[in-house]
Image 1 (spheres, rainbow, N blue to C red):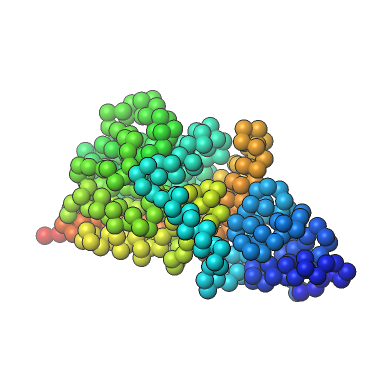
Image 2 (cartoon, rainbow, N blue to C red):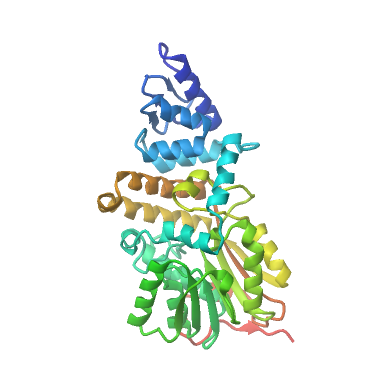
Length: 417
């Protein structure tokens, strides 16, 4: 590293400490005193500037929360492409052998105050999903699908990719007219309405976000699907009754690892031995806690599981896993389009929530893009079925057929003797 001389040694030391802890990414660091650290052999992608010493030292002691809070408050400034810089850090930053004592204390405290009890889960979901439907309408697609899309072509729009994702899932599940579906965590209702409207199934969709449900019920009424889709305000742990199919998109991340056995039991009693299901969830390659800053500012008590942790809670129900697919690049592209739309709506968001809120959400979306690009995050779809399920596809051809099913069934299945 190279550094100008004549500045306070303590600031210089702090910048060097941060740069080394980040894995020496190709990024220049500077603080208000003029101290600076730059990569020695590579042109920097951009500049991170600390406007005061307190912001600098908070990053030294608590890098994730310190940077997130400093950026949100406008005390840490970024010059250059934020996503590219975060991706560069993600690619070179070493995995900590263990979290420092302060971070462990913060996580333990968060685990207590953000516990996913029946009442706690409702509070956690309310903090994120009930910000306002108008806010999400500014940057999600027209159907308000808040999970990774499926881009069948490089030129597909976000709207096309979200519709393609929902249909792709329906084809994976081999939905048949008249079947009963339970959706766990239904968002604004797009998936439930898609399954009922295009595949002729009946759906019970569960959610604990009141604002989402109000809009979902309105959409069901407008599309004439109120008799086929029931939107229920209740916790997943209270799901009762049996169904042929169980679906959950982007909800498992909010369950919490300690509650996975409960989720497994819910799926088992819903599907019995002959039903089938699909889980789509953000995942990791190995187990680790979610960023304390993301939990503080974006997703209280969230946890991003490994594929193995999810498969483990399906085992007690004797479920057969038929397909595990990783759609990581599709979620990176989804987030890129979300961030672009969010930035285009930044002035409207700032007027309602303030400039700090805009910086928080910009950093959250940018970090997610960087995580998918660098391979730190995955997007899994797990297709499974009870041991006695006879609807086993003979090949995977039905997954890639063009055109949408219209309630007439899908590809032929192999019925075991």
